[in-house]
Length: 145
Image: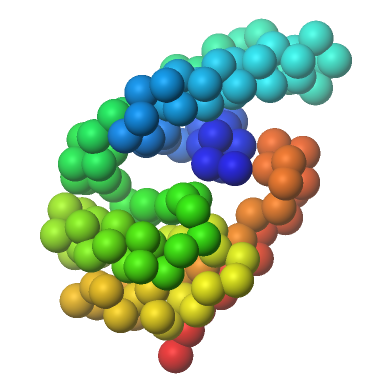
Protein backbone atom coordinates (compact mmCIF):
# COMPACT_ATOMS: atom_id res chain seq x y z
CA UNK A 1 0.00 0.00 0.00
CA UNK A 2 2.93 2.34 0.62
CA UNK A 3 3.69 2.64 -3.08
CA UNK A 4 0.10 3.75 -3.77
CA UNK A 5 0.28 6.38 -1.05
CA UNK A 6 3.58 7.67 -2.43
CA UNK A 7 2.10 7.74 -5.92
CA UNK A 8 -0.92 9.86 -4.99
CA UNK A 9 1.23 12.26 -2.95
CA UNK A 10 3.58 12.72 -5.91
CA UNK A 11 0.64 13.15 -8.29
CA UNK A 12 -0.72 15.86 -5.98
CA UNK A 13 2.54 17.77 -6.43
CA UNK A 14 4.30 16.91 -3.19
CA UNK A 15 8.00 16.10 -3.00
CA UNK A 16 7.75 12.47 -1.94
CA UNK A 17 10.27 9.93 -0.72
CA UNK A 18 9.41 6.26 -1.01
CA UNK A 19 11.41 4.27 1.53
CA UNK A 20 12.07 0.60 2.07
CA UNK A 21 15.21 -0.88 3.58
CA UNK A 22 14.90 -3.86 1.22
CA UNK A 23 16.21 -2.77 -2.16
CA UNK A 24 14.18 -5.40 -4.03
CA UNK A 25 10.95 -4.27 -2.39
CA UNK A 26 11.80 -0.63 -3.09
CA UNK A 27 12.55 -1.42 -6.74
CA UNK A 28 9.30 -3.35 -7.11
CA UNK A 29 7.31 -0.49 -5.56
CA UNK A 30 8.97 2.00 -7.92
CA UNK A 31 8.07 -0.17 -10.92
CA UNK A 32 4.44 -0.51 -9.77
CA UNK A 33 4.16 3.27 -9.54
CA UNK A 34 5.61 3.72 -13.02
CA UNK A 35 3.26 1.02 -14.36
CA UNK A 36 0.22 2.64 -12.68
CA UNK A 37 1.14 6.02 -14.15
CA UNK A 38 1.68 4.56 -17.63
CA UNK A 39 -1.69 2.83 -17.39
CA UNK A 40 -3.37 6.09 -16.39
CA UNK A 41 -1.79 7.81 -19.40
CA UNK A 42 -2.91 5.05 -21.78
CA UNK A 43 -6.50 5.28 -20.44
CA UNK A 44 -6.53 9.06 -20.79
CA UNK A 45 -6.74 9.66 -17.03
CA UNK A 46 -3.39 11.53 -16.99
CA UNK A 47 -1.34 13.31 -19.59
CA UNK A 48 2.23 12.21 -20.14
CA UNK A 49 3.34 15.54 -18.66
CA UNK A 50 1.35 14.85 -15.48
CA UNK A 51 2.85 11.37 -15.17
CA UNK A 52 6.34 12.77 -15.75
CA UNK A 53 5.74 15.43 -13.08
CA UNK A 54 4.65 12.75 -10.60
CA UNK A 55 7.80 10.72 -11.30
CA UNK A 56 9.90 13.87 -10.85
CA UNK A 57 8.32 14.36 -7.41
CA UNK A 58 9.32 10.85 -6.29
CA UNK A 59 12.66 9.86 -4.82
CA UNK A 60 13.35 6.28 -3.73
CA UNK A 61 15.28 5.99 -0.46
CA UNK A 62 16.87 2.93 1.10
CA UNK A 63 17.75 4.55 4.43
CA UNK A 64 15.28 5.88 6.98
CA UNK A 65 17.50 8.83 7.84
CA UNK A 66 17.69 9.88 4.18
CA UNK A 67 13.96 9.54 3.72
CA UNK A 68 12.80 11.29 6.89
CA UNK A 69 15.43 13.77 8.06
CA UNK A 70 13.77 16.99 6.82
CA UNK A 71 10.22 15.80 6.13
CA UNK A 72 7.10 17.66 7.21
CA UNK A 73 4.94 14.52 7.15
CA UNK A 74 6.06 10.93 7.51
CA UNK A 75 3.49 8.24 6.77
CA UNK A 76 4.37 4.62 7.42
CA UNK A 77 2.63 1.66 5.85
CA UNK A 78 4.55 -1.24 7.39
CA UNK A 79 3.36 -4.54 8.84
CA UNK A 80 0.44 -4.40 11.33
CA UNK A 81 2.54 -5.22 14.39
CA UNK A 82 2.45 -2.86 17.37
CA UNK A 83 6.03 -3.51 18.50
CA UNK A 84 7.39 -3.00 14.98
CA UNK A 85 5.46 0.25 14.55
CA UNK A 86 6.52 1.52 17.99
CA UNK A 87 10.14 0.78 17.15
CA UNK A 88 9.86 2.69 13.88
CA UNK A 89 8.16 5.67 15.54
CA UNK A 90 10.84 5.75 18.22
CA UNK A 91 13.51 5.89 15.49
CA UNK A 92 11.57 8.53 13.55
CA UNK A 93 11.16 10.64 16.69
CA UNK A 94 14.95 10.95 16.89
CA UNK A 95 15.37 11.85 13.20
CA UNK A 96 12.59 14.19 12.10
CA UNK A 97 12.21 17.91 12.80
CA UNK A 98 10.20 18.85 15.88
CA UNK A 99 7.21 20.09 13.87
CA UNK A 100 6.90 17.02 11.66
CA UNK A 101 3.70 15.00 11.71
CA UNK A 102 4.14 11.26 12.21
CA UNK A 103 1.33 9.25 10.63
CA UNK A 104 0.50 5.57 10.61
CA UNK A 105 -1.61 3.79 8.02
CA UNK A 106 -2.79 1.22 10.57
CA UNK A 107 -6.30 -0.10 10.21
CA UNK A 108 -6.46 -2.01 13.48
CA UNK A 109 -3.86 -0.84 16.01
CA UNK A 110 -4.28 1.86 18.65
CA UNK A 111 -2.86 5.20 17.51
CA UNK A 112 -2.32 6.12 21.17
CA UNK A 113 -0.24 2.98 21.75
CA UNK A 114 1.90 3.72 18.70
CA UNK A 115 2.29 7.35 19.84
CA UNK A 116 3.57 6.21 23.25
CA UNK A 117 6.89 5.43 21.57
CA UNK A 118 7.50 9.13 20.84
CA UNK A 119 8.45 12.13 22.97
CA UNK A 120 5.57 14.12 21.46
CA UNK A 121 2.55 11.82 21.12
CA UNK A 122 0.34 14.75 20.09
CA UNK A 123 2.02 14.86 16.68
CA UNK A 124 1.06 11.25 15.87
CA UNK A 125 -2.06 10.60 13.77
CA UNK A 126 -3.63 7.79 11.85
CA UNK A 127 -4.08 8.20 8.10
CA UNK A 128 -5.92 5.13 6.89
CA UNK A 129 -5.95 4.85 3.10
CA UNK A 130 -8.09 2.40 1.16
CA UNK A 131 -6.94 0.11 -1.65
CA UNK A 132 -6.20 0.69 -4.40
CA UNK A 133 -4.94 4.03 -3.15
CA UNK A 134 -4.50 5.58 -6.60
CA UNK A 135 -8.18 4.89 -7.38
CA UNK A 136 -9.97 5.16 -4.00
CA UNK A 137 -10.09 8.88 -3.24
CA UNK A 138 -10.67 8.37 0.46
CA UNK A 139 -8.52 8.65 3.57
CA UNK A 140 -9.62 8.39 7.18
CA UNK A 141 -7.78 10.72 9.58
CA UNK A 142 -7.70 9.54 13.20
CA UNK A 143 -6.36 11.36 16.26
CA UNK A 144 -5.98 9.95 19.72
CA UNK A 145 -6.42 11.36 23.14
